[in-house]
Amino acid sequence: VHRSAVDQTLYSQTGHLDLFLRFLLGLSLESNRKLLHAFITQTGSSSQNKEKTVQYIKKKISTNINTEKSINLLYCLNELGDDSLVEEIQQYLKSGAQSELSPSQWSALVFVLLTSAQDLEEFDLNKYITPDEIRDEILVRVMPVIAASRKAIIRCSKITKRSGKALTSVLNSETSSLRELHLTVDTLNLSENKLEDSGVKRLSALLANPECKVKDLRLWSCGVSDEGCAALDSALRSNPSHLKDLNLSGNKVGDSGVKCLSAVLEHPHCKLEKL
Image (cartoon, rainbow, N blue to C red; front, side, top):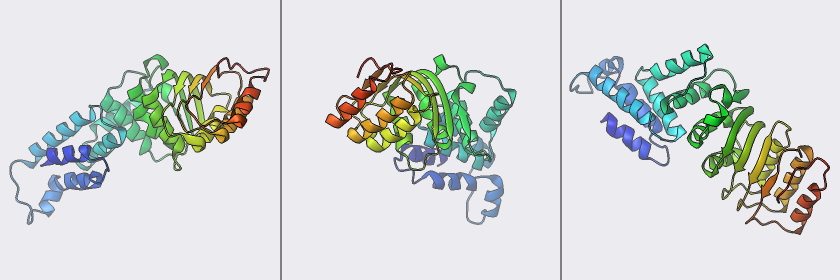
């Protein structure tokens, strides 16, 4: 029953079964079963069933499921009284060491950071992984932490369309706490995402920070108009010395937008080579 409930929750696209699964697994604890023994007919050892469920959930967390689902499964483990993954990460954080984390450990790290009693003032991804080891799946996994942080620090070689889509969701989110993005990256690819002018304005506010060092910015087919170009123009004037390539193909840029960005090229510190 538990395996079936876990599978159905993971397959759900709406997340409407998340809380139900936690409730169901919480009922399976021995202490709760004793309270409900008049209503529940026990079959087999509850401790054995619990351990099988715990191992099954851990196996699911280790697969490439999305972050929200893995976080819900960690809540489920908590309901079952198993905090081994969380405790493992807490020990790792106390040690201050940097070692390669498994998918399960990344999920547990995100869970620990998001459920911490302290507000997330700053999240530096490179405390946990070196820039050359950062891959798309890791960026996607930690995106909820980035969204919950006031300041995020990321140094990596590139952000591709997959992780760019997750970052676009953060930029478009009204509930995101992100105010500073110290991003050092050769390529930031947000192409073919519904960024639009509102998202570009938020992106531009982040790009204006001198600590944001992006060399190649790809915004192909993102619904950007002249309004978005004006925001980019302002960002480039504030922080002109890093961006070398700006791709705005496939957008709704008019004459005023083109004029705006063309004027940036005349800035003495502008490094833009391709527009």
